[in-house]
Image (cartoon, rainbow, N blue to C red):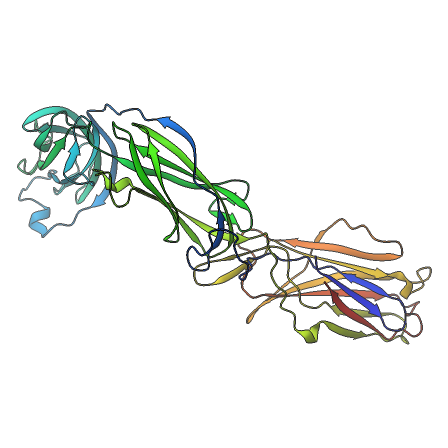
Length: 468
């Protein structure tokens, strides 16, 4: 903690001003291990460690709708939107059947497909729309899409389908096949797509399921610099055979670790590293599994996971923005006039709180401002004088922005013998006290004495000095 002392020139007088210290991320500190990953990002990192393994149960669903997302459809023209009919009826249309990973898929595996179902008619559909699924002309099951679908709207549907054959097959979805729902047109109720199905025993699917920072110094998406945290990672092998694949950890796109990891069949392997950021901007942690597809993975859509974190500096000290000319200052006292007030401004110093860096700008987030003053009662005769020594106000300056705060929370204070004083603080809620860096904090104090006394003879001024 920085301490600011004041001393009387001609008489032993000690005033102790104690502004608390702010915390931020030092930009010149060097990391000890594995430095220089990403712009202005320094960190120390341990080796990759396997911490556990969990078996994966096969999903035997043959046909199951797993999600529905509303959407607005765009008609080519009005006649396309409202089919020629004098009667208000729905018009169900299916389109865009795809599997995000491609058209080569493992057989006998529950795979997620997506398709669009829309209503181009002039009336809403019923609350339930029947859906039939065909593979190579054979119906493998039926389900329902939840409605109603209003006129001019649609739903993007994700559906699990299990195809138990090998080879080239056409998958067809048919909405309202039995015509239980009266429509304007029944000729646009199907959508088809050709896929190639391969033996599931030879199909490879490895995945990056999760990356997450954990530990005492992680709060939400914030990580405290200067403290070790653990990055936990889940890597899955949905294949029927064991796989050894490269696992890569990146920070802000720069590689930190690359290691080949052995994965058991149908399992999720838990990995971890211990990590300490010494300084940096916001950081995106990315986990990649076999990004070059050395394993001939049929599904490359799940081989990467990422998480964003904001680095905050609560473990290192923000340098004082104090000019040499401000290291010493003098405040005059009129020793001949009974009664009076002396206003004292402390040299500029940091405040308690946190500072963090974002991509383009630096910010200081102040959690609490605290100010303490001790005054030596030898300055006056305490038997006849009323003498106070108070915290007045705190001013925060950031460029052209200036904010003034009145500390209103009393802090416990243990005073040395022969001293009076007080310690007060002001606590801020999230986002209430944030400034661009650098900031300057000014602490103001007030000493008052009653009319029936005056400072002891010879006291002319008080000199303030910073001591490291």
